[in-house]
Length: 413
Image 1 (tube, rainbow, N blue to C red):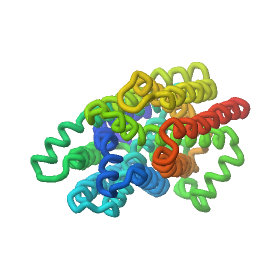
Image 2: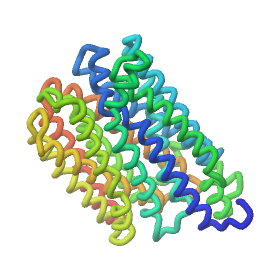
Image 3: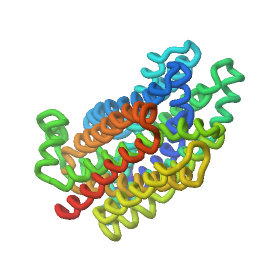
Image 4: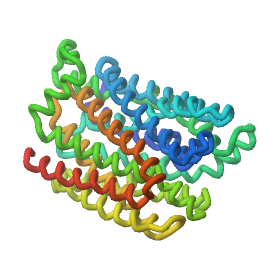
């Protein structure tokens, strides 16, 4: 640790650094959300295939969450976060190439790499808790989640700028957002490399008195995850809640642009709706974190399940095109996701031993992403054959699981 810096000083510096990187990196993640399914549809010529780009991105997030967790266990948060941002930048470049050469295979490869950026954003929330005290842990985590609002709301609204950039460099309009995203993600990587010192995870291990052998426990990451879930049931319930909430959110979000376009909604309006959704996901995170510290993680988790159910009812009742139901439904879908994710993540941070911290966090994020990938893969098929309202009903089943998991978390608190 730098001379004269206390653990509290490092924690404040860590949170400030992560707030900036989250805000910048979120632009790179979300700028293509409003156009990814449309680009996949144009390249493949099939609406059923439209959800594949998002599905492969979620699969990439799952793989990166597990892989980067292993890197972080050995090298700390800083190295893992930088590698994830650079992988995401490479994926954004490939998405542009895919549009130019009209290749679905290249687009899907780019989506996998771009998924690493989401894994980095997820890992950043845990980095904020490494040195936080228990009574302020949810708030520290939620502030970093909140920082995503800045870039995440701006990202989808840059679709028009992205189209202008695309025209100026001679690439398809739907790929312009990815071109901007590539540059932004490189900037985020440079910021983290420069500012995230000392490394919060390595310092937390040092403060806990963990020797090198303690930081490298025997067995695979998956095995260590299973041991913690077996010994601490609340962690297992939190993982289930987080995975189901994320899957419910992703499956509906990725197909909403098509649902709106079928009713004649313009690209700018679609981008605005996605921004409203992202606002719900992140803008109120500090309030959610405060509530989790004040009233308990389980109470906020159950509240998240209730909000998700209300949001999905509104989405299912929305007509094609632009409607108040789709605006309200997507906003509340984001709020419910925020409640479930902040509360469940804090339970995991609270109850996991430091020697297994990155293994459990990375594996739980991988499980969350794989569940969402499965839902995303089904989303296009369900909408193509049965319609958007049926997709909302399917997602409501997942929201119900969040309620059950929240109850179990309270029981094992």
